[in-house]
Image (cartoon, rainbow, N blue to C red):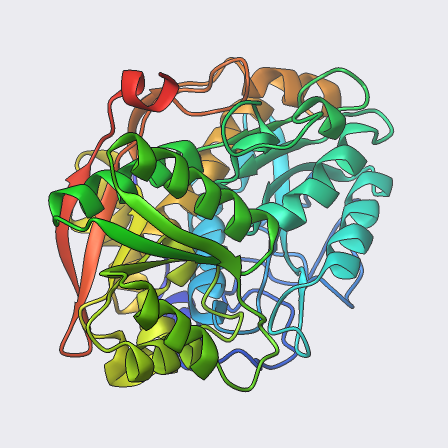
Length: 446
């Protein structure tokens, strides 16, 4: 991929947008559009625009688009700074491709699956967005979702779409049951997401079987022997908590409890007392930061100050955890699938350097995964043309050499063959990279 420089005007517009979304909070604003600005902006040509209630204006190049790519991300709440950056990265990549996939001219709309009230993804919003994508024949593919619980609602709707299924590439879903059965999944998964019997969903990030194993492996390296596990009761949180328990027990770690925390609670003092009296030397927090995570961390550390906190990628962007929990988050370990952007090489370094120049700061690791996701979708459209079913089928022919996140293939389930898990620690209010962990397949599958 050759990164081309945009004009000064485009840079200034993007810089203003980046500054606009720098602050994050669980009660974010109602802006549902991408903060970036494409070459042509809000036109649309012969394509039908998605509803403005959820989606920003059509971004496009100098030619009228023949098909639309949409992204489906939670653009409000604690993840706002990250997800708006991911939307900007999708647009950035489309610009590098001159808004084309083969002979198909593309437009792009950034859509929001969150609400201000929830401060995160919303099930009703995910479902209504899915229907809008499926019923709009201009939509040829989707980059998303960010949250696995939202994906469970979107995938089957797109699977039954007219002329479909509609291709879907997620940069962030890690719940295993979306693509395969086995540990950490529910009965009937993944077949219940594909009512036509044809797969249309892929992802470029490793699933939580690997992340759960990586968390357990590192906990064992730290010498932690007794761990209390909490989950936020959502699809992702319960799944990653159960997987952590499975792999921790395989390593001889004693699990003292695996219970839910109420995201609407005003106090977690009694929970902290239970943790302290259990004799736990660590707490694994399976869930997302926006589910009252800052308050949870503060109360746990106030009541059980000596426990080591561990968390999966639901606590990213790490800046949101730091903002929500303050000094109580210090020393917490947080994992994230993928590798730090400063370790990317080849096309990955090109993307990082180019995007940093435009945005004024280095991208988040998930931003690089969003860029890779749209690259996979573009490659599928090059093969399948402006045909939903053909593009979906082409996803499973993906063979990326020197991509943004490296070289990989998409397997028959829709999973990537490439994966590492990065471990970070919060030190003095700053995130610090610790190491990469790649769990052995025989440990995961055994």
